[in-house]
Amino acid sequence: MVFTLTGLALAQQSSYLPPSQSGPPFVAVTKLFPGGGSPPPQDPRVKMYQGNPFYINEGHRLFIWYNCVGCHSNGGGGMGPALMDNQWRYGGQLDQIFASISQGRPNGMPSWNGKIPDGQIWELATFVRSLSVPASTRGGPAQAVPVPPPPMTTHRPGKPVSEAPDVTSAPK
Image 1 (cartoon, one colour):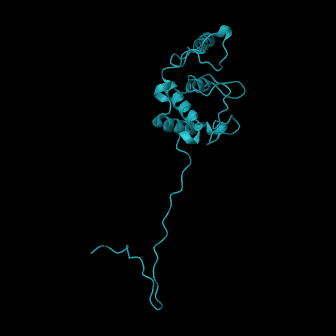
Image 2 (cartoon, rainbow, N blue to C red):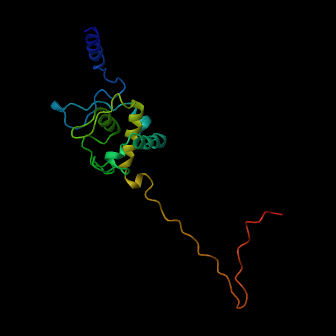
Image 3 (cartoon, rainbow, N blue to C red):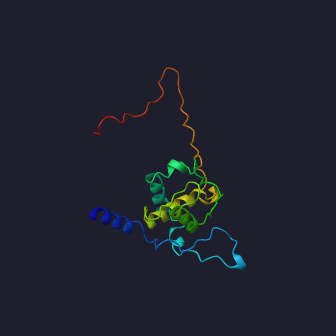
């Protein structure tokens, strides 16, 4: 009986986890506000993460590590919403993406608050945001580098074409 009561007391204590204090307190997912109100200010951490190549790279690593590819695929599209276009249901700004990852969204996106550290959620959000940046602003697709034609050699009948030097022998 004592063990049962102790177990219930411990279960009640651990069932409440305080909300994270480091996430954005309120992130607007719409431009419509009652009474013509203005949206809340942007989270100050956005400037630190936005477009930063280091955080984009770390976010890509975490995207694979936390198996985000299971729903969103490697390129950002799968059974979860595509991340490579500009169609954002809950806003495509960095703090809005952070909120979507942290708080979760209806119909499939779980809340990762308390399971993934906030710094890593910011890195994931930075990577996800980078997926939908137009190619013109991220350098575009790889361009083919022109390769010069091989040098012309003259071949006289009866003489072999010059061969490449032997690079396998040790220098003298």
